[in-house]
Image (cartoon, rainbow, N blue to C red):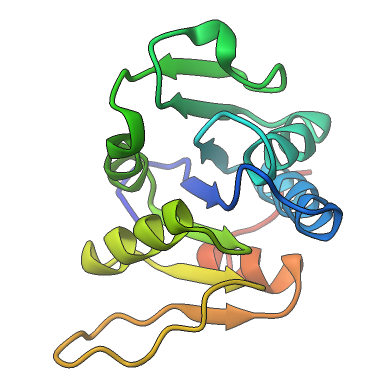
Length: 163
């Protein structure tokens, strides 16, 4: 984790997610907010919108990093919106901003975020997502988890929940 007192945890997943993935994302967002983390996401639909909804419903802060240049295109549950104008390259900005990442489900954008986070040496928890083979010479591996609670524990560790 960075030296910041408040952890920034990215939640990523498909923009066109099914009901099960959206439910998991909502739960992850709420759990992260209750533990005092700032949730960082791509700011649009699917997993991104669901985690934002969960986090704000629990009183948390959600930073949305949009691919386009229109802040109004972001999900209404975002607390802070940054219109990057970077398209899919915003995935690198998301990874640079976060201390750890939770991936829910899978899509090509999600895979790129997981890969970038692993290359940056950041903790990655994968919840119902990509099955990744061992990569030669790589020391960082994602942690496969089965529940939102396990995902949050994997990225926050022993951090105490907020009262």
